[in-house]
Length: 542
Ligand code: HEM
Image 1 (tube, rainbow, N blue to C red):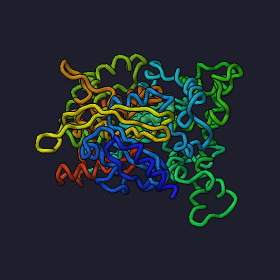
Image 2 (cartoon, rainbow, N blue to C red):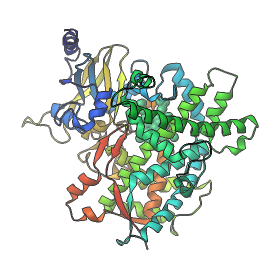
Image 3 (cartoon, protein in one colour):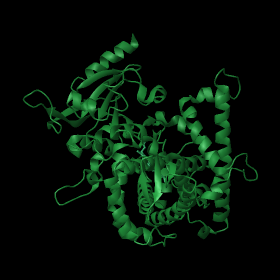
Image 4 (cartoon, protein in one colour):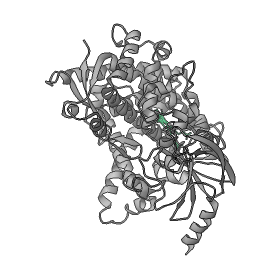
């Protein structure tokens, strides 16, 4: 009866906003993550891959719904102006810290905190994300892609197709993890060294398998309430204890590796040998941990460890998945690949350099406008973080747009629209629908669903809609690593295309274009949007 009353009250609260459907699962809670793309079903609000279609159906850039379990009014936003207000008004629309609780595996960290705690975490790390670090990201990426190319070339010799078949998620996860480990944490290893599985002294597993195993088990960890996880340490829970024990062991193994990196850095800081630490991020985190001076710039041991894990995770998985989609798209769209190639050829007429000077970043990035646009366009169509929830802390209003139907009663593909006001009561939640706003035809035009890097290239008559690009979120809580990711990814895309032709694999070549896309871009929503089957053939250019 209480639930029904809450739902009735919510109906009142959402009365001036189209939609009004009941959500049987809360989009930010465990059950929704388990169900992923399978429920709600296509055609209903909350369907994971609906993109802009439900907004088009209702003719509005803001839709209302009610979460059945607790009667929360939930407003879905695919409107750049309304979202800008949400990301700017931080006292009204706060971070959904409850949704991030299970991610605080090693303690509090920047992603899962709010208010003054969050400011302290961010204040410590922020100075490390500067242009000098971006230059370092560039030189490290060049070093690592060259090692990747050697590996691809030696695999190609064993292939008969004239190229190497590459499983993109596996390779790019390794590469992006090497880049963040080095440029963020000063752990500078080679691809072949990193591929060794023998554990170093004092460890049960090597570094990379430890990170990968922890990430594999992250899903179990997120899906298990903390009290069950803690209980499993003391009593046997049928069907669960084994998985939870494996999860615990994975996180323990990674903890030991992170402590190694941290204690090395502590020793350098203590002995004044900070010049040994190219990685400003780790230096800042460790210095804050060792600082006795101000509370504002300090981190506890737990916070240091937890931020190290957060940066290792956030700093590679999103980039690896986006690059996997981007490279697959380049195989599917050879004419776009040709444009990336021409730009990269101009920059590197003699091929990708084996070593980059520290000035290379500043000189190269402005010349790779099309490669950067290709990366952004991939993020627009496949945003790794595709929904962001914000609980509402004060009564407020937001302006959205309602479509005006044509005389036939239907909406055109880029409909005429008018502004309307939505009342948002305290206790409700808003959802930044990244998938939908990035395909909203009012912002991106009639070809909003098509892969066209030109969406991100300004011309005399077109300025791309900055506020409608939310893949890195927006405002003060947007991604701290945005420039890091764009630098690394542009470098990887341009250098890969400069050296190889990217082709659709033989086993799908004979299928229709639509079928090829369905297979190669098949996706599952996990912690981030994950490509299931992204693979291409790489054939060295002559
Ligand atoms: C394509 C790559 C990336 C994408 C799409 C991405 C996306 C995002 C998004 C959407 C958020 C906001 C999350 C929220 O509000 O809940 C975020 C936050 C964050 N990202 Fe990224 N990210 C990427 C790469 C990186 C990299 C390379 C790093 C580190 C080197 C990083 C570190 C972080 C951190 C620490 C936060 C939390 C910031 C805060 O709460 O103040 N990310 N990212």
